[in-house]
Amino acid sequence: MKNFSIDTFNYNVICDEKAVDTQVDFDVKADSMTVYLTALNDRPQFIEIRWDFSTEGDIYILGDAWERSYGDLCFEKLSDKSRPLPWYFAATDKAETDCFGVKTQPNSFVCFFYDRSGITAKIDCRNGRAGVQLGGRKIELCTFIYRHYDTSPFDSLGEFCKALCNTPLLPQEKIYGGNNWYYAYGKSSYDEIIRDAALQAKLAAGIENKPFMVVDDGWQVNSCQGPYVPNEKFRDMKSLAEDIKSLGVRPGIWIRLLDNASEEISDDMKILRNGERKYLDPTNENVKELIRSDIKRIKTWDYELLKHDFSTVDLFGNYGKDLGDTITNFEGWHFADETKTNAEIVLDFYHLIREACGDMLIIGCNTVSHLCAGLVHINRTGDDTSGREWERTRKMGVNTLAFRLAQNNAFYVVDADCVGILEDNIPWEKNRQWLDLLSKSDTALFISCGRATEEQKADISEAYREIQKQHAIKPVDIYENLIPSEWEIDGEKVKYNWD
Image: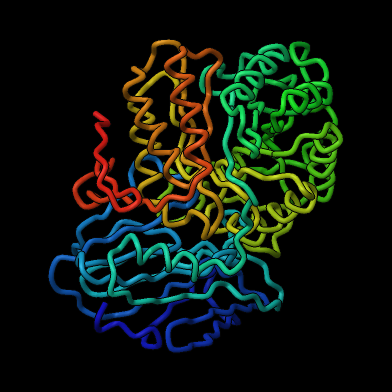
């Protein structure tokens, strides 16, 4: 990007119909540019911005993901074509690095394409699948940031992520403990959670910073959806939280806020998409009140952490792995409130959760990474690992830890997901390596096991002590491997065998 200049560009506006009164304004500075949009009757969908310049030599490109990543992040060699690069990218010749992206919490979804002839930024300002109805309102769509670094891409990207997020929401202590999903998979009970919490207390004995025990999906009356009241196996969620605390463990709980099968939910509270009304529309005032009441109920039960899940797929109809350069590709739908962009609606939803949670810690799962930065304490940056399949853990866990580690403590605390322990499904020699890497990563560390051998208990207990320390860590073989095996930890090279 040596010939790149942020103030030299062309742009194009795409509306539902021919643009008549759409106006785009730019506030350009030396290494940043803010984009504003207004329209009276037009319904803008996209603004495409093109910076033309030539790139020679071998350049490697790493982009981000819309929400979680799916084991597919990598430094890809630049060619005449580019895959979609959501939110930001780093471009490096292995000696110097250029970083280009948008600041966190923008009012639009932004995706980049980098080819030999230049860069295209695609700004998605739609409402659902249609153009937004601004009605004369002027909005700030996004702020582009450009930085050049004379350092390695990993160190450069870490500094760049800090420049993209001015107000990360970070917990005061290291986040670690138990989550019951990857051994129970939704089949659990009050008594089993107490057993799990007691194990966590034993594993963390002597550590001043208390571990968590997160009750994942399966505690409520319906599998993976509301209403969010306990089923007969869990009986009393407030008593469960009290019993967890009595063991010296902090209680956490899972919820899916936009999927609720309660008979009190009317059709007008749901999004009409693909001919169906299924998931809740967060622009509806009754839905907002339902979300507040669900979180308020959990707060009265004295849970200290809320993990909210599935919101991106519930809002837009696809997981990140099925998306290309736009956040939604279902035809002909919109939210009840058509005056806000999709990004504004997501931000309003996250702000509502943040305000309702008060002093509770928040884990985002299937959340939009760039929009939840500053509104969640911890973010699941990759798809599910597994207690059953080692391939999922090495692919989803190690890849996301390596290629999104730069976001840790810059956007939020990264959660690369659990060490899943389910009897003898995965050899401990493999899971032990994943445990060791997480314990030295300065990210969140969650263990999912109902029972553990004495060897496993000793290793986990040691990892819990290790996670309390501060480590300097980065992947090394980032150009050769989707799943890096060579890491530099506190100045020393460490080799892992993920195969």
